[in-house]
Image (cartoon, rainbow, N blue to C red):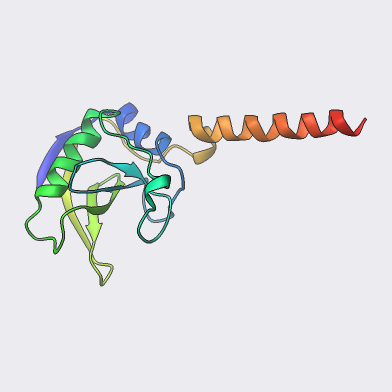
Length: 140
C-alpha cells in the first residue's frame, strides 16, 4: 500500500470535482489505460461524451491514477476508485473494498464538505435560480 501526504484543502477538492455524489465515499473517479481520470457520473461504463477529463487538475489525483493503473492484484487495468477519509480503494465484483492508498495528514480530513458547499453545486443552484427568475419575468 502506498502512502500519500495530503492536506484538508486538497482532500476537499476531490468533492468539488464530482459531478454526481455517491453515498459510500467522499469522491469517486474512473480512469483508463491512458491514465485519464474523470469524475463518477454513472454506475456502469461511462459513455465517452460524459467523461470530463481531469488529468493535471490535481497532482494528487494524477498520482492516485498512476498507482491504480499499476496495481497487480486487480483483474483489469483502469476502472473506478473511491476516496474516503481512510484512503483510496477499489471494489471487486463481490463489493469487497481493497485499499491501495492511505493518507498521511496532520489535518482532520473528516467530516466531508457538504455537497451544497462545493463550487459546482453552488453554480448549478445559481443557474436554477436565474432560470426561475427569467421564467417569472416572461410570465409578467
